[in-house]
Image (tube, rainbow, N blue to C red):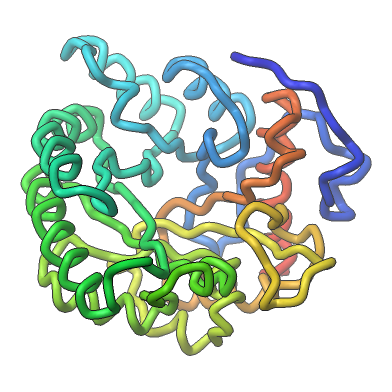
Length: 318
């Protein structure tokens, strides 16, 4: 794995981790009410490595799920895929929601090219048992109006969902509540769960769902009731993040958010309790996109992230 220099001065850590960060996590158990699985999404915390290295890391750090990008599996033989899946199963590792390998936001030619490659990617993922893929919806556009953008998204994502559905894979869509993203474009687009529900209904494919992020829930100024509109089978993945304490809500930015429990700006207790009430049993991960976390040594970043997510769950449910 690539190693990084640990910059301790820039990252805000939950107080419970301030003295313990750096040690490997050995406790995997969550409170009995929590059915979800703590998932390692390496790229979201600046960690690089091969498929084998990151599976080993997930095991050693106590994670119970791992996000697997489709590109990892390109060129693998059936034997390699089986061995990889068997090792994960033996160590009680399930699969998280990896990223969608299709660029659907730009030109039609690029979308068609990526869509043509999707069946092979989907088969590789299904071969190892992956059942979840996710992507995000940018909350604005410079040339397409809301309705034009809705039609383009629905038409393209319907094609994507149908291919994934043939391989038993769910497609999760994440709305971005961050005001700065929405206001940077000429035409605003989807930035709340209610709007995303409308898009999902318009697309009309049974394997579509949502990726919920505590940060976007907060920046969209949503409530617990907005979370409870979703059923367990509609939630493909959940991201647990905190917000920057130095910024007002309208000034929050996706590249300055924090690990869960680091600042207390977001009511993560309420968010987690809502997930428990729903009965959510899928992957739970952190995705802070924090520059200092990204520059930590990989082992440190994975340990700190695990402890922050697990610690937030334990605190909420104690």
